[in-house]
Length: 108
Length: 117
Image: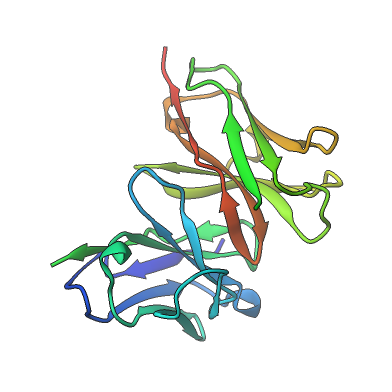
C-alpha cells in the first residue's frame, strides 16, 4: 500500500499570498496518477488536479500541480477567500487507492 | 451534469449489515471509461477508499475491508450499492459515492452513518 504523507498539517496564510502544499509518496506512483482535492466543512471533496498536473474542469488557473519522483506539490498562486479549506492528495495508480492526511489552509 | 446521491439508514446497530445505494443522474452508469466507487471519511481514519465497480460488475476492494464489503451495480436503475457486514463503532463515518476515473469526480453529498445500539 502506498502511504501519502502531506505537509504541513496546517498552513496559516493571508489572502493574496502563495500556498505550497506537499504530498510525499512512500513509493513510486504509477504514471503520476495523483489527484488533489479541496474540502470545505460539510461538503464532499472537490477534484482540483488529476494526473499530478492537469486541472479539472472549471478549476481556476491559480491552482497548479507538479511532481518530482515521489514528491508532489499543489500550489495556489494567490489565495482567494474561498480557497481556505482542507486539501487532500490521492493516488490511484495502484490498489488500494489511498489518500493523504490533509493540509488545512487557514486564514492568518 | 452528472450527479450522484447516496441513500440509506443513518443509524445501524453493531454486528448488523449496512446497505447504501448511489443513484446516478444526468448520465449513464454504463460507461466503459469509468469505475464507480465508495469512499468513507471518519475523524480517526481520514478518507478511506472502500471499493470500486465497473458497469459490467468487475469489483475491487480495499484489502482492509474486503471480507466484509460487497459492491454491486444495477444498470437498469442507473445505480450501484454497498453492503458492509459485521459493523462496529469503527465503521461510523460519512460515506460517499463517486465516479472514479483520473481522479474521483463527481462525488455525492455524503451520508452520515452511525453505528450504535
